[in-house]
Image 1 (cartoon, rainbow, N blue to C red):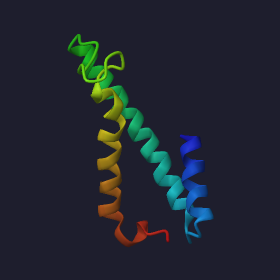
Image 2: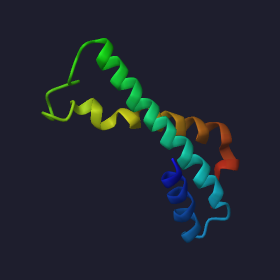
Image 3: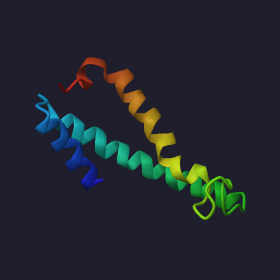
Length: 91
């Protein structure tokens, strides 16, 4: 979470953003949301007594293991973007 916040701060900062701290806050929240998605997907697989969520990528837990964090983080970012509107614009 700290690394994501630092990255989320310095990328807008070096790009000339007016409010780079907004990027840090969003990146930290999205890091937590990604972890929640990963933990939830692991919980569902354990409850279903399934080792892999598919066979497209053998030995990696399936395709869902590759995108489980994104499944939660993307809607969280869309929610921020939809609710914050102009406040979210740090450029």
